[in-house]
Length: 125
Length: 490
Image (cartoon, rainbow over all chains, first blue to last red):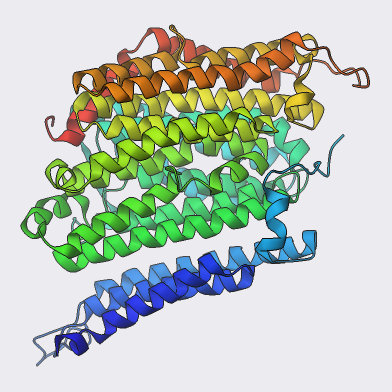
């Protein structure tokens, strides 16, 4: 009973692990960013689950309602979603630039370009 | 209304100036606006520090009293950090002008806007008393830092920025999970409230998991070994001005958040029930040795200094693992002093890049003849990082060794000494190339850099020696801050 009662937390855990795995195991940068998004989404669900109160109504003050759900986690997650969108945007912009500069966004192919950075700088004088 | 009431503006000034800065055309205007905002922030921080040592300053945003609203709460610890960040920005910006003109020739408005955002984020993390607000500012500063890193001279900076983005976002999200679990358990996000309510629920797995998530998340942000993989590339490939600033401040602010969470929010007792000491001692010790050895055979100077930064994080981790007033004070002093020495070292290397367009170690051959003052500054700052007496680096290492001896921790003493010897090797490698090796014959005649790059560099060198002799400000404030963190002071 308790196992099913907390099903949203199980979803959080599954999404979290799936996203985290994608970030670590996938070489493609767009897939890494997708993984990052799934990972972040799991945290959003974690927060929002915490705001739900069983039998609670939407948190708008009105007559005849005694129990309200907690609005604060929703507000926090709105902020976190904005942060997540910004991160995704910066990440994708970088992926586009990397594709322009290297012709690939596969991390495995590019890793040697980074460690160690032996290539001469482009604006060398 | 005194200047103290302007305390929140040390964060707001750069934050408000940033969008304006992005729209300004040309090169001079964005720089001038950035400098004005940063200087204002530094003046406010300088006035806040002495007041905050006496009694914590509080400011409730939007006049919503905490715990409903967000509160800025400034005591000796974060006032010191805020002054460090803004002062480093004030010294760095005049230096940055020439360097940025060369490395980021176009669209400097957005570049300085990003810099202001990064700085505002770091200041915000430092001053806020709200755990979720820390996350927001952490992401403001991180996102702008990713973009700043991507402005580097070569295309590898893009890869470094991407790797930093992945690791940094994972770190911030881990921190967010930890905060979420704490909120579920306590129903508050205000740090002072959290500190009151955590003891009641301390004996639950949720709070232990929150502690773990927060430590790992911040460990990624502060580049604690073995979570440091993003740092060398990011520092080495970023524009020199970016490197100077983030090397001096960004990871240190993450250390501050860690101290605040562990000592103020969770409390000493909780941390000691968890394997906090063992983890930070072990990782700090291995980090010092591993990163110092790695620094020795790096191909470029910036990469070498980046590994040195990982090693310095190791010293700080070692210091805060001692869990004593002396140990925390040593950690705080090292945060301050490391900014001075690493800022100076990266500025010296940046000056070389400005002249040569390269920072490969073999390009330093014979450089002491063409750029005597830059190389002298490099060696003096290098002495500070080695920990030679009369330098700031000596003070922090001495404080750390004394704290370790007081705890009877002789392994820490040995590791600090070995780490210092390794620093002699990697700093010596560049000094040897510059002073003892002949210059390559095909090198075009280059001269010393102008005063624009030289004066800020020597200001930092002078600070290295000043704080190596007069320790009343650094060690005094740090001890006060350590007392606040340990809960033995006001």
